Length: 205
Image (tube, rainbow, N blue to C red; front, side, top):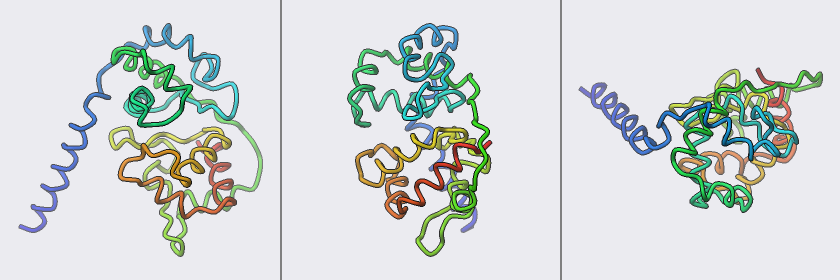
């Protein structure tokens, strides 16, 4: 009876999570999104592979995650003045179309040699002594993320952007993570650890 109750509870939580985020699951039109994304290309590239490492690659990201970020830029629950101004006039249809277009792309992954042992260990195993879980537990063994759970793909993302995001979570400057998960994890990371795991993610595929 106890096992059934736990399973039922887990199922209920899953349904609640899907219901809470149902607005991001609307199917967009990639063709329409491509045209609308022309204004995004200056920073994020024509195909979603950004032109500068400080701007995130959007190509191949999960539709729901992209839509969530745009909605939160629009509502300013994710604070970033440039993106807030860009997202403010977007309709739900615009957001769905843009998300569908960028999700359809393929992320370009840099082929760089280097020593990624420290970053790989953090990503795959975490640091038990510091209470840091493995990044792979949410973001997947190959950095593919989990669209249904709302965990973004991180494979091939620029190291500079990942480092920036982790520092913002650590400082509490970025606060749109579910249940404060990323803020709690990033708070335990030292600067060298942030650099190491960010470098590893950038070559992960």
